[in-house]
Image 1 (cartoon, rainbow over the protein chains, first blue to last red):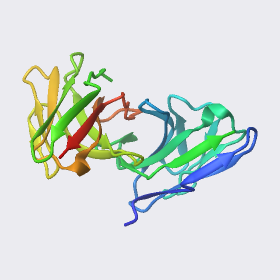
Image 2: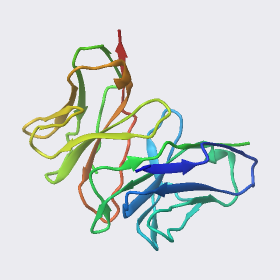
Image 3: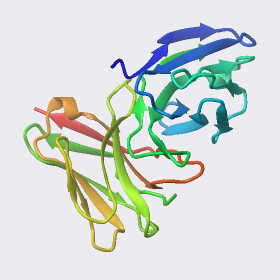
Image 4: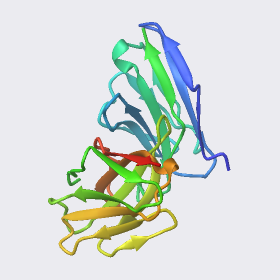
Length: 116
Length: 112
């Protein structure tokens, strides 16, 4: 199994540009989530999904959109990038029980995004 | 989810046991204690979790006090590859909006 994969690894955007961060997992996990990590801070939840077709907001959802058309993929879209979105983005997945993440979340390697 | 308190940094000599403490004095009866770590520039990695009893796996041991207000993660024989930030997280095992709330963790430096 490849686990959780994320592309691209690095990205530089100009303010106002849009892009999609890709996340895929091959473990048939129902629960997937996106976090951002800023220097010196812990991870903050952006959006999460408890299954195909179901998404919900986390702590810091503004400026980001998600969709979940398949179990495997959970892309994160930035519609109009802002410098405040410069961060490292991590995707994670896990089994879910009654719509909630279970014990072990598997994280991808991260995407390092810079918005100029 | 209950708040946790960890020391910002610790040092450990290679080959020795690393004992990482965590305070969670407001933990409720059905909240679990989880430990994750993040090696520089990588995604977080699950280590271990527990509710009341002490737990051990191939990576580490988790000791939870009887009143559950604190816990200790033990890496029995630390190596240089264990240098990382270690996060103690307290959360319900299930919930309608389960998520991992990462604090700032403990930066463990393993030295020769």
